[in-house]
Image (cartoon, rainbow, N blue to C red; front, side):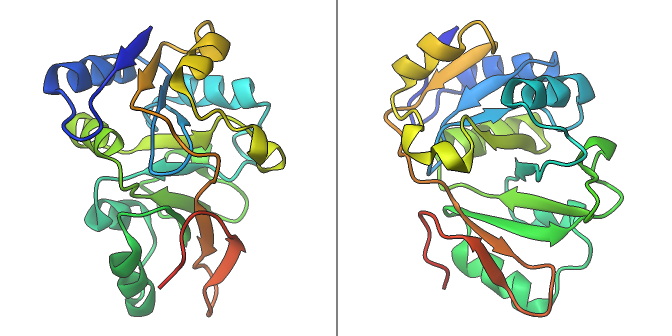
Length: 203
């Protein structure tokens, strides 16, 4: 299903329709402030595994990220965010960043990679934020293509639908996206390190 949602003022009825799909173990494609992403409820193991299969990833080895509604929700899943990191999050979110943090025991088992790290995002996108708000918990955030195929990222939701309609339950049309992914910032060590320079300039 292709579902058009207003990015500036997301229709509540349509957001609820998407959330119903997520609650039933569905897989969605949704807009962010960078590239379109694959998403599901992070607490539905079958849905997470379905997305990982679709992308050819092993959940226990992949660096999986999820989208939160705000920094307090990030703190529910991260292990002790120190002051410097907290200030950096506050300055740069919502925005085109993925922050890699140490995970805590609230993170579902499927996300427990060997480094015990998670990637977290709060995109500056009304549709993504409305979905997470309505669901009441984070959704998985995985790009449609790998970093190696960055220039081949789909930007038009119509093209995305043509390619993914049989693989997902709904493709949200929130307008044309970009082919520049988020900037990935590793906050696990003493110093923050940019692992991938993307759309955001860290301040």
